[in-house]
Image (cartoon, rainbow, N blue to C red; front, side, top):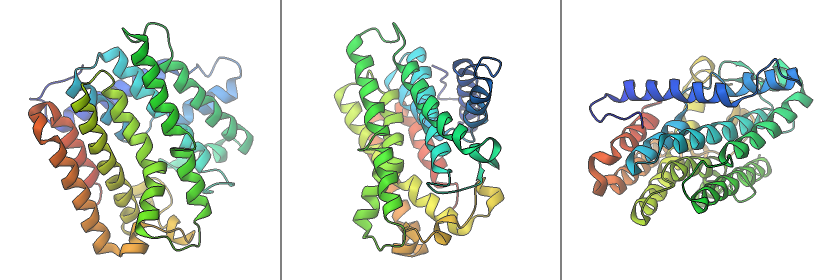
Length: 298
């Protein structure tokens, strides 16, 4: 693993952000390979991918549990490909209808709707191709478990299901419990998968701990996103600011109010940090990533 507990967090994060970009560059088909437009659009959507929080969570969990770097690379790239696919589809007119993503035109705006649809399909398929490559893990059972984790996170009991609930909730009043159920699926499932894939060879106590950590930090991530939608501008976000409010979507801010939403995020953060206490310095990067997620806004 790229690991040094003496390396400061910024240096560690930058090192692994560069690493995942290089891994994705190798995994994605060349834009010179037919069909060229599709492959060009896949690379457009998956590369230069912002902060790479999910990949960093995967690498941090891998460091904590001493997962082999080859497995960690495959897991992190599969997570990022799945996340990129979800963003491409979320931005399309039939979903959230957003023209801007990561500070540049959304895939369907840069290309067209049909290409956007196919890009999402192809990126998701590529994620499973990466995770199912021959001889990735020393034991087949570990690799099958990893595939199962990603499949559940992406499906109707995960990200796709959360998006379905989100679309059905526009203009409706949701309770905090209903909202958290939606975000456990839409956002939290893939964040949890990132951590679990990084910890794929871990002991049961480690798996239990990182799952609970990911549940809390995944919700905190979404609460912070809702706060940013209110407080940040489009340039800072890299996507259209105020989109949730303009679309009449239920958010933590609309349900709890801004200050209570901030308090809720801090409590989720505290719960996540407390879970990691027994693991000491081994969990340093997971703690720092929790700090990073919170410091995006306040």
